[in-house]
Length: 147
Figure 1: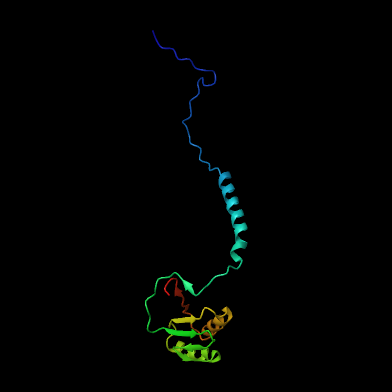
Figure 2 (figure 1 turned 120 degrees about the vertical axis):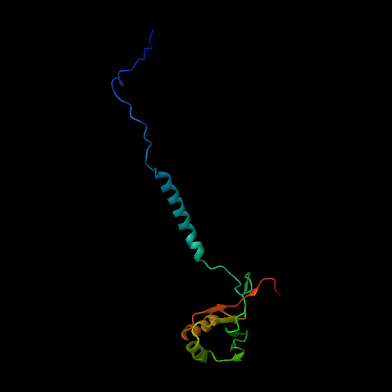
């Protein structure tokens, strides 16, 4: 006796196609995630631009190696500006720094300002540094807990 295999009318005489995986990417979930991220950024962007009261002179940073060739500009609480511990008028600072920048344009400048000074005074000194052509300036801060 033989084995009888029944075929349905639909497949009678037709060849079965091998299974092909679907090669489509469903982008709907990705668009949903992107829209949620967009809403989060839109809501949080105004919060980043609002001013937060900070005390800039203190920072948690490692001590950098000392550079003996660097210049130090200090501003004390009486707004006296000194260049390498020699008092200098703010109006003459750019000219003095220009003489240095002609011989060494890559000299590093450390600006040490008393924390009680207003931001505008420190920015005035930074402007004079910029006018002199020097671009490698850094603000010196005190490490938290060092006192």
